[in-house]
Image (tube, rainbow, N blue to C red; front, side, top):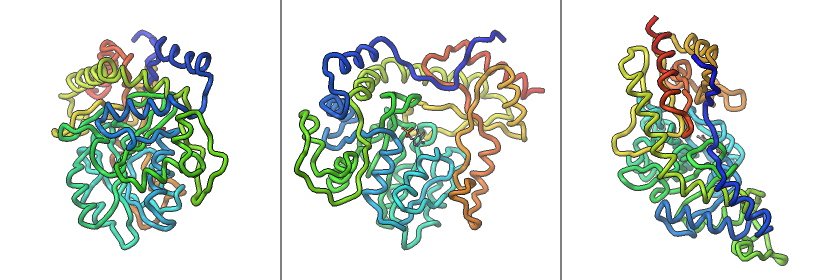
Length: 378
Ligand SMILES: *Cc1c(COP(=O)(O)O)cnc(C)c1O
């Protein structure tokens, strides 16, 4: 195979993003959180179909999750979360002094196992954090029904799912508290960044202030280029706001999502599935039929103990791979001798993430698949 440098994932940034940043740096001259952040929130609101006042941009997806958890929990409250997620989901919970309770995912969809989540509900449970693994929102309606039954809040870790839909409604246009990430490799990037969407006024007020050290009502002033000098503070806050520089990148990326990034990601995934589909050693994640996704990552399961040898073979041929994710309940910080999650632990042994980003070529996918099939057919 030719030694072209294939990347696992990649930021797709061009002259238009560079121009937008240049404008902020040289014409606007205001680099912190100002009008451009307000415009990004407005653009996101228009894209998703919610009121602008329901969108709060923050510095990262992790800070979005952290503020969301902190807004609805007290220290010691429990939040049920699938163990098969990025460390960020867990750290957001423990960072808010709540307790992450690891639960299973379904073996086929890799989304939260709703029956297992129900078993883990106690009198201390305050919320369920669901994770849209590889952009799949899973059985959201059933999850919201469970939450309603036990009077729980729902936080959607939708870091993988910006632009995706469930029952023809955009993720973020319904539900309780939805968190997105715009880090360098997500469906759209702002360099670093994140957003929270909710229609809960109380939560909105808390997080809009909390991203700016909980200085009361500072957000509105900053959009007008003003500051608060005589203010009060009643809660712990953070420096979690987004900057104008990052917002400028995000606004350009948002325009490119549906016309450029989404069709490319979808086409690459179809090609992978078509080429690998008939191999008996490979299992794909089941996509729920009532959702339309823009795939953020492409992970497959390699059965019959063949995963590790395939990893070695791919890496030997300069094909980068990932493992999404090491289950969080296996990490020292979150380990608990009573927690065993056999489905998740088995997935961890079988899963492998293959390259996916809009600049990957169909020809690259073909070469990667040829290599995989050659190895697995041996
Ligand atoms: C990327 C990601 C996050 C965190 O987003 P950052 O912007 O990188 O902080 C949270 N959860 C999941 C599942 C992610 O993939």
